Amino acid sequence: MEIKLNNINFGEKTVKIESNSVTELLEKLSLNDDSVILVGKDGKIYTKDQSIREGDEINVVEVFSGG
Amino acid sequence: MECEICGSEAVISTNNGTLCAEHFKQRFEEITLSTIKRYGLIKKGERIAVANSGGKDSLSLLYILSKYFKKSNEIVSITIDEGIKGYRDKTIEIMKDYCNKYEVEYKIYSYKDFAGRTMDSITKTRTGIPCSACGVLRRYLINYAASEVHADKVATAHNMDDEAENVIMNLVQNDIDKMVRLGAYSGIIKEKGFVPRIKPFLFLNEKETMLFSMLNGINAIHTPCPYAGMGFRGLISRKIKQMETEFTGSKRNVINAMLEIKKGYSADSGIKMNKCRYCGFPSANDICEACKLKEELVKSPVV
Ligand code: SF4
Ligand SMILES: [Zn+2]
Ligand SMILES: [Zn+2]
Image (cartoon, rainbow over all chains, first blue to last red; front, side, top):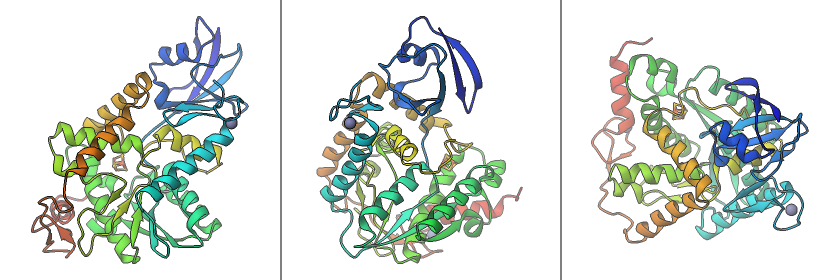
């Protein structure tokens, strides 16, 4: 399944995952669940056990220190 | 995952619960208020300075403190301008908009005014991790600003991640005296000129503070300082998040362990305070760290 991602560091990119799981997506991006908030186009927030649907567009917001 | 309270779709799952957006916002405020209550962080009538960078965490803190304490306490916002172009200038504009909108008194203090140099300039001539110098100046100026605005306490938005990082850094450096000064209330040294620091977000994860600001429509930029993530602290910060993902509750346990160790230490634990020869503020040495750094910066060429 292909998912469109957007992130302040890597910009826009499409990634392929075998399953429809957020956990697999995070592994592919080498990110930890505690260090990221995944926000769908409609404002939906994905938790790690949720499934992603084909065509979903996700904003990968990295959690950072400071502020 | 389903919200543990209402069963609707969860937006977050941490050691503080698995919750939907509404119940998460509610829990976040409850944890903040219970930390304030448990450690007696805010007493009626006290003037509270909120260290407000205009970033996600401090605006969320100002939001909650204004919501619950505006009637019983005076709240004033203090901002330290490090002089980081493209970052701090932006958050300061956001801070001003927020304070103007919600009628919060604010004051800004800058590195440039204090040490004659911006952080951008300091990084050009000073070797080492920018955060080391920045931390010294910020800590000093927060205390200076808080005493200038006659605050009884200064509230910072330090969260569980920040505190766990501090604990681990102090352990690795074998600096237990420094470690036991951490905690929700850092007023262990009772000294004139030291404004006690309080940390109402101590038991909230960084991810939670970020999500809270997003869900409350708090207009904050979600990009880090360009100098962040370097050196030892950066490494620990990344490792802590990895550890928490694999073992939920790790950060909380690190903090609980520190709080247990702290209990065994008396209030003055051998820390003898003098007055800094230059600025007159309390200092463990003859000249405080900030004045020492200022002296060094004045000698180096301005870029
Ligand atoms: S990340 Fe470092 S340089 Fe940037 S504001 Fe924080 S302490 Fe200063
Ligand atoms: Zn709920
Ligand atoms: Zn001094």
